[in-house]
Figure (tube, rainbow, N blue to C red):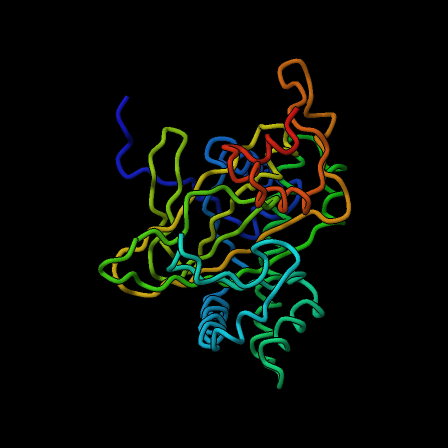
Length: 313
């Protein structure tokens, strides 16, 4: 069977009529979400609560952030690998990223802002917080739909209470003529869920199950909602995260945003409803943040599937 012409991800509309919990539209959208995550590990979302003004504001804030001197940006440190500043890495020389931990809280947003702008930057702080609230709402709608379709609402509610959010600002500079065009190496996210948002420059590519890479058009009103490794473990392998990468074409700088969810202070475990004769237990309970540290060990780096190496049965 040949490849489909111009394959792309499913697009799912999160408009007000589809967000009335329990309605026919909600149920239909929920099934579409689960089908897309099971088939692709991700999908494209349109979200009516996200405005073009917010799109412009968050990327204007992003430009302001990356215009800071490197010796200021490297102050963004974290005890969790890759959650703070990452840049000037030989294998990915085009990549630079900074992260706001606990991005949904005023404390988290202010801690980051005041670190990089000691005299304050209310515009950046307010914009980052507003953006994070919208992304968290989208994430929680998606996960409520998934948990209802699978009949594991109680399990999700317990995880929601322990969810921590990371907002990652990302910039790729255009490659020189003698440089690699690889912006970020092929990988799956180590999060529970991720929401990726691009500006106008293309680059994000998703690997389909047939091995084909497809480019995702950067539209201001769309997001790529993507399952992470932790979601695969929680769903007992029903949802597998998609491999993705960034390939830079041309010299133009590329800005993007990643909104990542992590589970803190409780173990992630497969709900008993998702274990049966056809779906035997695949993953042991695990600590999400300890898993992130495991990825950077020699064993984690060698593994084709770090999550299976860490907590697979």
